[in-house]
Length: 314
View 1 (tube, rainbow, N blue to C red):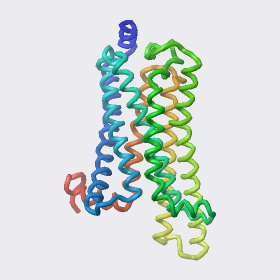
View 2 (view 1 turned 90 degrees about the horizontal axis):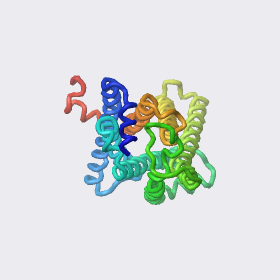
View 3 (view 1 turned 135 degrees about the vertical axis):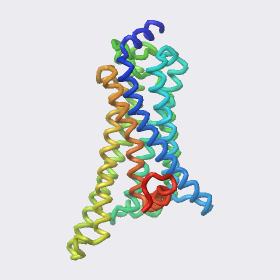
View 4 (view 1 turned 90 degrees about the vertical axis):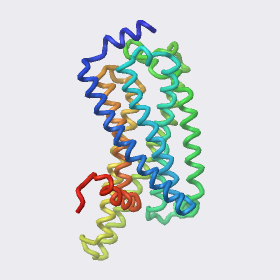
């Protein structure tokens, strides 16, 4: 362990680069924590006021809470690995951190997939029987889907510390937890399948179908000669753009997470920081888009901005 610690310390770049990496990831994480805390606060306030929480509000609460915890973990990670590498390599701390980090990552991916599925069912204009049945039952299904997501994420994260980073045994930044065996490969494959690939597929399919549905609706509106400046049509075009941004952010995050954990790329400081910058940008960027796309959140944000002096009063 001492040899690994000394090797890690010798591979670290200059302090200026470390500070720059900390500033970038720290800023992204801080913005994400603030934005997601705002989403949680708004939904909790509505919950207390109305004595009930909407279906979309439940998903946003689960999603935002997991992202606040995840980005707090990321700040702790970059502080520990580049400031106290010897302490970071201690087995107990390393295993606890990795299990928690991957549990929150998986939760974030699954909750976002559930949110995309919910939007698809509620908004998509498909008249097939399965979609019509889902529209009637979606409110009752969402709590089950959320807790199922938690269970799957927890199951994946429990095997994570034992199998990850075993493949890249020649890297000085690799953390060794055992010998490279077929068992580790199987666990890693199960983890990526359940924790990354399946929610990614669900998100892509539902978001793509929703975009197709919105485009079909726009074509119907144009054929009805409502005019290109119709507010409803502009709202649909805006929704398509937002969903497209969701897709870009989600896919980028999933790919970066896969590359970070599979050790396909060299375990250098550059790739390590670059992938973590992408991962840290996703929760903040996606949550900002959620505020812009949600009328209630957007209205609450506009009411809050003058009070915290983020912009001059008009």
